[in-house]
Length: 270
Image (cartoon, rainbow, N blue to C red; front, side):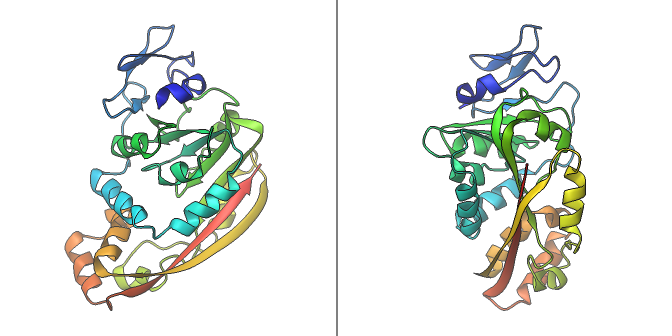
C-alpha cells in the first residue's frame, strides 16, 4: 500500500514531501497527483509522455508467463539475495512479480514503472507494495537514501538517480539476459538478439556511481508449448518487432513442446 512507503516518496515537481489524502497525493507546494482506484499513484510530471511503456497486452502476457512459474528459480535467487533488506525499490517493476517474491515479513517495496497497466497489477501483487507510475530516465519521485536495495530486472538503469535514492550501505541488483537467452528461438522467430558485450555495457552505464561487487549466471531450460512461446515473446521487447501473423506462423513450425534456454546474468553493484 502507498501508506507503507509514503515516507520515501517526494513530489516530482518540487521534491517536497507528499501527504496521502483520499485519492490523491499532495505536497506543501500545492501540487496534487491522482491515486487510482486500483491503488497506484501516478507521479509523472504534467506533460510527461508514456513513451515505450508496456502495453496492456504485454503486461497480460508477462503476468501469465511469470504466474505459470517458468522464471521461479530466478525469483527465488533474487529473494535470497535481497533477504534482510527493509525497503526494496523495484525500478521497472512490471507486474511486481519479483518484488513480491523478495519481500520478507516486515519489509516494504516500492514498484516504479512507466506503464500504468503494469502499476495496476503491481499494486495488487503484495499488500506491502506501493506502486507508482514514474519515468526511470527522469528524476525519481523518491527521497535521497530512502531504500535499502534496488532491484532492476530487464529494465533501464539510471545510475545517478539509483545512487541518490540508495542508502550508502545498500546494493543495486540487476538482471540482464545473457547471449544464450532463448537460444534457437531468436533465429527461428526473428527475435531481438543479445550481444556478447551486454555485461560490459551494463558496467559502463553504471560506472562512476556503482562498482561491480559480484556476478553470477543462472541457466535454465523450459519445455514450452506453442501458446507459452507466444506468451514469452509477447511479454518482451520483441513484441514490438515481430508481426503477430508472422510470429504465429513461425511458432507453428516448431516442435511442440520446444526446449527453450533461459539464461540470466545476476549482478550486484555497490
